[in-house]
Image (cartoon, rainbow, N blue to C red):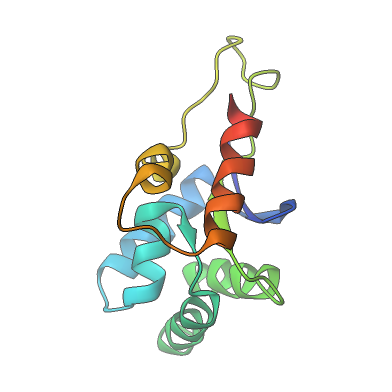
Length: 135
């Protein structure tokens, strides 16, 4: 399985394999990167500039490391985005067993959309589009 960055209009590109993403998450957890950690935890972020800043710090802290390469690819893919989404890129039609392969990072999207402590309309619209694609 691969992991991709998507924007409001769909997938932008792959940034890691399943194993590479796992290694990246472990490296991020060892340091303090609040915006990046929130993107990983929630699967979506409207604070793209904060995530890019955290990614830059992460890259500088681990020169030459594979996790830094993953971070650089993520950073490059996020250029110009207002909302960044992490997805495994699979849909109903693409999963091996014919069932939707859930992305744990996106599991709480319905809750975010219906939350009274709502985020911006733009974020809600992006979340709605993601949910429409996975239904």
